Length: 400
Image (tube, rainbow, N blue to C red; front, side, top):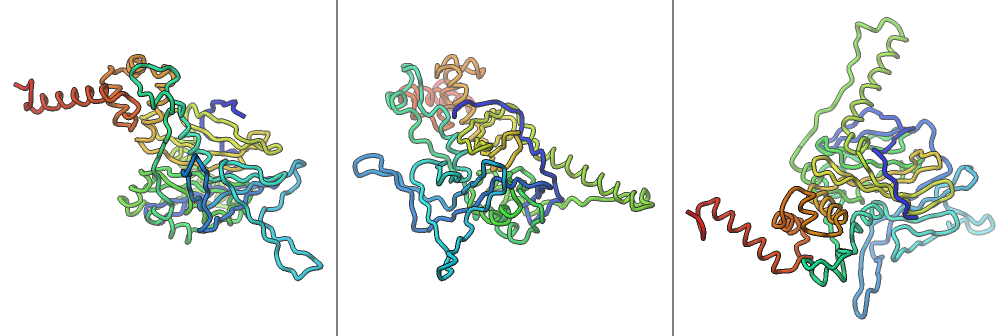
């Protein structure tokens, strides 16, 4: 399943916004469903601390990773309610001890586990799509690129992130925030910057998965904002008491307050909900549901989010998890996208970006892709930049 489509923004139809709750720099906006999705259920599988994922890559070498938790999606094919995976089955003739099930995953981010169960790693599916950007490297062996770049591409690709436990105040906020009876998701802001959106299909699943937000990872911007901004103001809805003369008037005032808050939330989350040119790629089909991941347009002038979602056959959102890219991560995606559009031709890419060859080389070097270029090209560019800085300061060769 590789047929990607382009959409504008994420559609949260079927979810309503509840008043926000704040704790320090953390603002959490509950998302409620009046009609839950009953034929798709999500369950968290927490890994044993001693359990590692090991992939052997060659003689005496291996890739080793530890993932704190995974999600298991179970569904039905006839739209009848699905039981939340993890339900304990008991032998009526036995001692009543629960039957335990242990799952393992070694290589793939999404893997079928049973006939109507799929196990996937939250956010890793989305990050895998970002790290795979132009992973194969130059399709043409231009003389500027090293043999390593042409033969091995961008391997390895590495990006840094912070665990939720490192985001100041998030632990306390998730512990004390009220969970609404119909809550199926939340929008997380840190210092009023959109950090993440998390949506599931059923309120019972959300109550179980709410604490797993601490095991998720967050970008550099969110980590620093949580430390630099001690508190955000609370937004309190105000009713016009002069316009209330009956119960009907009070209902109208409350409805207007809810509408105003929903509109305000739409503006605050506009970087995701109104994002232009999101590229959505289907990954796995599950009955009438589809697991997909999406990438942004990598516009350096706006915020950019990657994520993964499950939608039904009508396009209704059943699951969503997002990650906000840092400015540096957006810049890397922006450069890779333009390089791919120009078949990795440096001069053509420089023209498309409105710069010259030294300019595009500097940008690639600053973005961490300098190792892909021949050393003499990088050295010449760095010497040229150093000469310009010295001239600007009035020192060094060529300065007057």
